[in-house]
Length: 257
Ligand SMILES: [Zn+2]
Image (cartoon, rainbow, N blue to C red; front, top):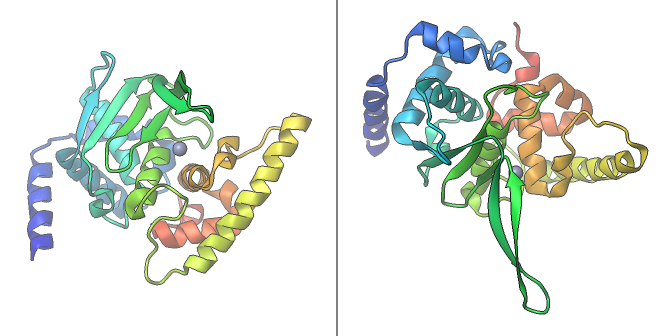
């Protein structure tokens, strides 16, 4: 009953945001990876994006003023992973902070002798456990060859639903944790070797080498590829693709369109 009431409230709040078809089309034109969604899913994604905007608080940082198109653009991308899962998968936090371009996060690290080092880390995004999502906004070049900052950070949010990001989000009942760990573990190891080899040979990898940093990054980068370059991921790591297909309940490599 409470869930039904919440759904109703969400729909009511979302219905107060008016977006014309032209506006949607203009925003979606920047997101070519949505082209393959069947018509029913495209309208489902629009509805979900409005509920997302009604429920979350998006704010610009460092003087960035967020216009409605930017907010719609971020919401559509953020909602693509949860299109078949529902907005509850983004529960427990509300804030999305958007920075102009890449931004710098001041860090502190204590070394073995107890000295605290401070340094600035240039990042494109960050997801905080139980806290906001930080994103960078680039006016151009949203679709940069399978890299998608928004999907990346929101995949971390899904991963954090069961604690710190470790590359293992809460799986559905019909999924096997052993199969997930096996598929991701072997692919992560293989990719780590390929990144090491590419560093000495100078060979360009099709998937973002940042995935080799940690299992959590591997899951986030594979999720970007799953939605933005699904055929590539299916070719490179079919077992990872199969696990993500079951997790996201979508099959982007086999859509007609
Ligand atoms: Zn990350």
